[in-house]
Image 1: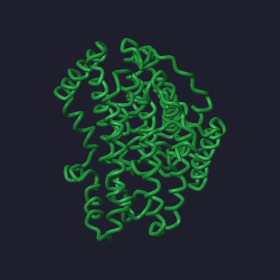
Image 2: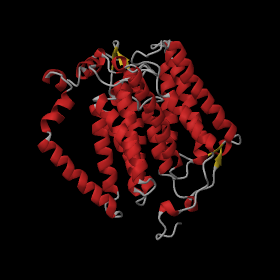
Image 3: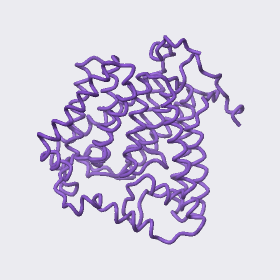
Length: 408
């Protein structure tokens, strides 16, 4: 066991190969999706799908080449996700969602296989956090370049003048999510002394500006909730965290009192109170989904993987999307892996890695109410995979690696 006097950050960890970071970035490209705003240069969806699936295939091949002996690390999170994949495949075999459901299962399987292969380098270090920030930072740079080239297309009327991606088709919620993750993780690295103030501001200020231009309420609330909970987790061990937390609380009170009208305008986005109260029409889709007749098997196991829509409209709720696709059994599995991550995070000693993991878990939990993504390959499962990698025990405590045969 580790000496209690030795902080987890001080433990020597093997350096992550650069190819692992490349594989991780390719997984991020895969989860960007292929549908969104109109791009500056015409990009057929078939081409964007080829790029995203090609990225996933390349990530898998890189991970397999790096880990040809199939040495994997035990992971309750990935084990439960694998169980969810089996459930999704069985539910998709009825072909109610067409052959597209089986293709989504194949993509999910390749996604999970790549993560399993990369667990060899999950050691509680911050290398993957930096790569996560860099990869999403590059995505945000493309958003800024697109805005500079074509402001009208980047903030189209059909999205209410919200910032979108026009070099790669990205919706405002996607851009907002990536911005919030970059801001939150960069802030924690700065607080942990892993990044100087100048470089932190170079990342945080533009990313925060992008987030504001997207008018994405889910991302903003997730950022605030995640940062607050992460800082509270360091309350007893870091005076700097206590100061920043106090500053955020006082600053929040000031903004609410002094700029309440401006904040209300930003949150309403010009919507009527009725539209705002129905969560931009989401509540109507949810009511229709819950009221639709289903067989006992569909209640239990769902209808298989879909495009996260019901009757042609997006579900935009992770729990209802899982209910629709994987049934109540799927909801139980998703709740189980989230509970595992929360419990492990609570039991780990205070550290910067733990704070980053808590931020990611809290963000995904808060976003799950108005965003889908916890039941299929998505940025949210990738955020949680990063959290799982950060919660791995330090090297001195680690068990021996298992080979694929030993885990069978």
